[in-house]
Structure formats: structure tokens, C-alpha cells
Length: 176
Image 1: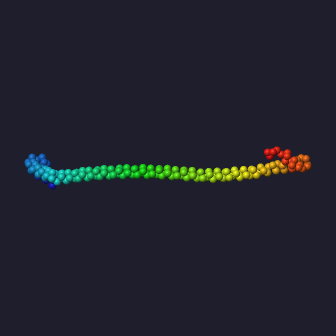
Image 2: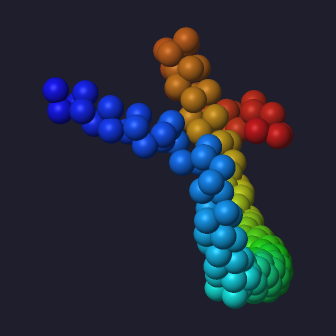
Image 3: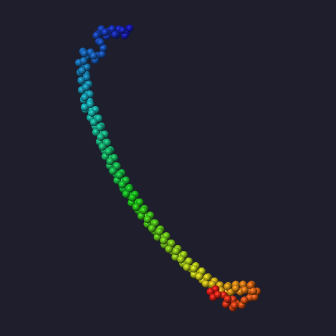
């Protein structure tokens, strides 16, 4: 029942709904709208826009500085990379030269040792050939005596009588 009484009281006043649609209240609403709009324009122009603009400018400056630093660091890194590559190439060249020098020295040392061993081997070979020649010469001096003994033994075995050493010597050829 209390609700019905409130609806009846509102109907008596002539209020038909929302105040925005009531033309008698428009002048006050327009004044407040202009005051609020003015305050907002003032706040935006004097407070918010400068702060946002300053923040944007700071960000642009920071980004520009960071990009400049990045470019500078990139250039330094490229320079260091080039220097390192040059040092590496120089080190490779020195290592190659050192390896070549070591190979040459090893080949020279090997050749020297080989020539020493060849000289030793040649000396040993000539010494061995000399000994062989001596032994052969000595053996050849005994060949005639061995041949005479063998011929005498063969004659004795075949004939049953021993041959005189002078006859056996005469029977042997002159080369033996």
C-alpha cells in the first residue's frame, strides 16, 4: 500500500518521468554541463595533455638514446669481431708457418740421419765385402789342396792303391 500512495503522490505533482526530458530543467542542466565541460577542458589542456606529451617525449628521447647506444655497441662489436678475425687469421698464418718450418726441419733432420745411416751402411757393406773377399781368397788357396786330397781319395777308393801327390797335382787343371 505504501507503494500505491507514492505513485499517487507523484501523479499529483505532474512529474511524468526522467528530468532530462523535462524542458523546465534544461537551463540548469546546460549550465552544469558547460561548467563541467570547462573544467574538463582546463584539466585536459593544463594537466593531462602536458603530462602525456612529456611522457611521450621522454619515451621518444629514451628510445632514440637506446637506439643510438645499440648502434654504437653494434659498431663496437663489429670492430671487435673484425679485430678478432684478423688476429685469428694472423695466428693461423703463424701456425701454418711454424708447422711448415717444423716439417722442413724434420725433413732435413730425417735426411741427415738417413745419410748418416747410409754412410754407416755403406761402410759396413764395404767392410763385409772386404772380409768376404779375404775369406774367399783364403778359401781359394785351399781349394787346390782340397781338390788334390779328394782326387787322391777317389783314386785310392777306385783302384785300391794310393796315388802319389805329385801325380795328383799334375792331373789337376791349372785353374783349380
